[in-house]
Image 1: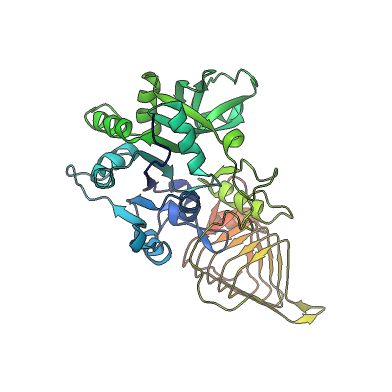
Image 2: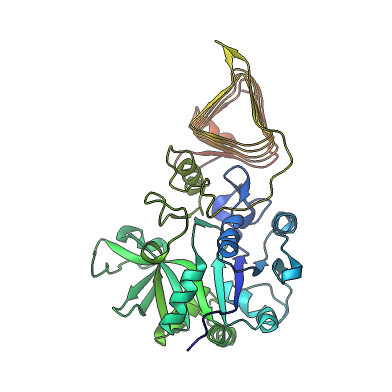
Length: 414
């Protein structure tokens, strides 16, 4: 029987290009996209592993990784004295003249890291979803299962099955089938309106992972995908179990409202919606849970400031999150997230928007249902999100009507 003080190594897959998040991913990898004012998306996965007690972590990077690498170097410096680290690992062509050909190939090309650490178990987590998980509970469940891999699963409505890897699970918790984005899925036995979807988080017994990715690397017909190829193969061999995220995951400080929260922020509308989740009175993803904090680097900036208090010139924010270094100078902010070093000038109105770092919103400007990336200057009197037909001629506008302006883009006066 496996010992109960297992050595666990974390592998975070952070190589995604994030094309559906353009223009936010024009100059950065998806895991490096800012979130919640102060954070990057990757901070969530890393915080979950660190809070779980797992502090030897390799972050496998590939596309447009400079800002991600810089963030990891500045933020995630662990105690070398205790043997802890978060280490970015770029694609190095260790096994041939090719970059990572998929998430499974990324692991295969870095088997040297696993050999060096020689862990009992390996957590392979994605880098760009929002959730809180105590990975140690999942490791314990994996040990008890005796399986080669345990997959974190989440119940979702059956009509959403086409966006996920869907698992069929036996009464013993073993996965009997794994279907990648099925068009005609079967509902769960206890609730035909739902399916069990993969969250993209896995715990492997080390031997099982090494064998699986090595075998996959030799298969010229494989897509080298962790879900579609590695998990499918282990399921077919009867060697995969499921960990029910909502039922079995118990994070300190969680409430009935935020328990089981998980979001894939792979599109502009999902990214915008996730920010709106933050600013409700009782947030469904609660950044204020200090029993299970989300860690990041905070720039040494002064507190936010709100200035002017006369009828036609009042600096105020309502139902919003406003970060350090922000000055709301006679403008109004409603239902928005305002990132550090942004200024909202007199008479300006920002509503239902996500404003990233160092944005200047000029006098009398109106910004609605928008995502504005770093270093953008919105001229006085400009209108964004007011006339979507006109906005489509100038900016990216999502299916849900959210206007996105990329980093350093020029906004022309109206």
